[in-house]
Length: 379
Image (cartoon, rainbow, N blue to C red):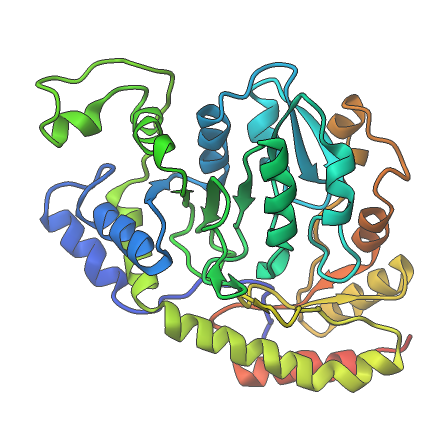
């Protein structure tokens, strides 16, 4: 009898999600900004200590809201890692911005802050650090450089909810930050996101943009006697059904994080000696960073070895994946001037990185099967 398949990702319930869905229906308000949306907003604001949190239909839409809030115009430049998901850059390109691709550090795979200052120009309107794998970028240096240049920072924290940098939650340091609640994330509602607003003067306009460019939020607070169209905007509100699922997960965040920490540490302990013996690098977490335990990856010696290892694991019913391709070498990236050699660390890492199965439903037995299969691989 063949061994059961070990999925790369599998969403799972964490608490009262189904109960809350039923309750949302009983309240007769399942469109945006209902009871559970407000519960999620309050939870994120209180737990993280952010000025305002607003749920969105995706992290992509949160990024698009950030671009609108910063008044990104054609000809503006935004500095973004080449090693990230396309949404990080697309949200700003949609407003006419030109992406300036920055390389990553070879240790954390985050934006290389030592390259940042040289890329700033009078046209720079935003810097977009991505906390890869939920491990913090070097935010003190990034914020110091951008403050001198008076350029806002938008943290792409899709991987990093509840991770910390020097004791501060990720997503609380830039003017804006974005979160993802996609099914591959630690905390999920299938599809969803949030915009975190740390700069007070952006709060009111964020509410307007999110409400299709109307001052509807002010109307419901009794601040105006009717609401009308006052700015650009779109419909970024998720259903309260999704918010009900999300709140059930947020309530259980400490249990979820503890389980993922256990999985991550089991991988690390089981693979440390194996990795050293075969020139494989495991994830690096700086001492001043408390990671979010979003993923576990391997940096293999070569593309050829990675290709063979993916097949080796698949033959055993274990599904693993590579990750980002360099954006500066994509068809679109080359239209913005991207060329081979511009981001050498990104180009190298992209060929060698392999993500192992990692999700809340992963059992200890499955984890041991993955580790055993890796030990059996012939380099």
